[in-house]
Image (tube, rainbow over all chains, first blue to last red; front, side, top):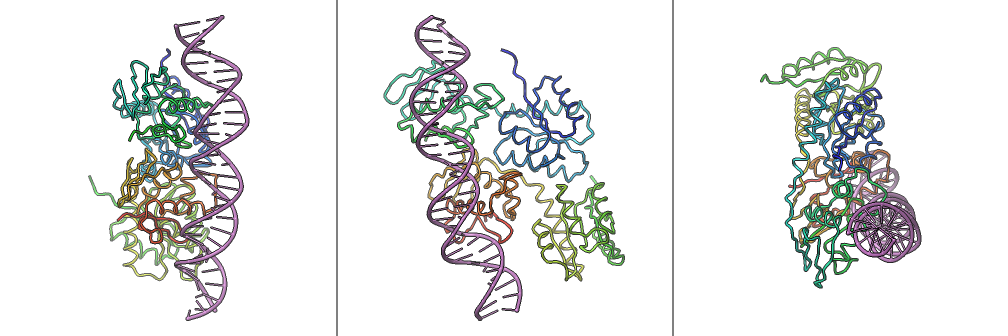
Length: 235
Length: 235
DNA sequence: TGTTACTATCATAGATAAATGAAAATTTTA
DNA sequence: TAAAATTTTCATTTATCTATGATAGTAACA
């Protein structure tokens, strides 16, 4: 299995700087997606998973601060590194307030940028460590044995689970009572960072409902949250 | 660490008033930069950081309102205190008031000016320490879980919240005790190129009141501020 | 003080985008 | 190669969002 690259969204309108940054980041082993204005950036964020966003404040159409604000309001906590031309502390305060995680003033030293990029990505991975679920999990009258790749439903019927099914179940149960966005699911279970036009996730959820729900029309455990993702609850 | 002086840009063309204000503000401990017309003001703003701008509406070359608009278009949210003569267009001054700034009508009392200057600077510093809201928020007997997209009202009833509802709730709660103008709401929640009729926002507020208020006719939390926007309070 | 103009409230209905569910197509595994 | 697992496709259903309109409330002004 090839080592997974971290993916970065680079939002910068100035061509030369954009290309230079892209080249250097790729040399460091990151996978770069390019955006040249605010709307493009927002669109990319809707469709892909990123480990980090590097964004200029001064952008055509929609400025970087507004973009960050929008990202945060959507509940997305991807780390954001803001680049600013102005050396004004007003920008700085405003940017950080809106949820940017770090801040660099142009012109900046390339070394410093790379250091910060590394730090931000590492930091966010650290925090995201959730307590792992045990080998078995019970909800209602259902049981899941993650190691045996096997489930038992309320009628005591054994259900053979596949690897992917187990991965998705684990992910949802680890994050129970929280909505897990589709991009996060794809990222965690499939390893994509591109959100394909696919109903694959939905099919897995449908299967889970068939396996474990009394009434798949009114799910108690596997809830869909429209336009975001899915949520597992057990109460 | 030496105490930092707050810096003010004073934009006033009338020499006598300008000098008088400058002297008094300096006596109060502020650092004053002078400008005597619109273009000068804009130039100063490009090059320096200011904690506050005091600006006459009636200026040679380029009037104060235009200068303010220009500043805002640049994404700069420095507080602006407008000085206006009584006969100036009420509409445009009203427009500025919406931006959480302040205005004074000439002739004004010096004490009052100093009070407002203080208030504006203090207020903007306050805002800058605003933190993003946590995953959960409680007000009265209500609870909102932003990660679960779920609310609980005083009767303990669970309310499934939608993505947009959560975005708007977050925005209002992040800015609690402040009026959030309708344009700001549209910009932050709906995005850059969507213009739903303003009734849409009202509908969301309406729902929030149904979910969380005892008496939706006399809201305790979700207040409308006529012709400006909405305000969330929790006291 | 009454008239007028504006703005918010609230219910309802329509539009739209997303999820469902079944089945077929494809890929992977044994 | 057969069987299992996974992914795609597509018609249908549904959740959510938006527009509309009737009413009530509020501010402005003579």
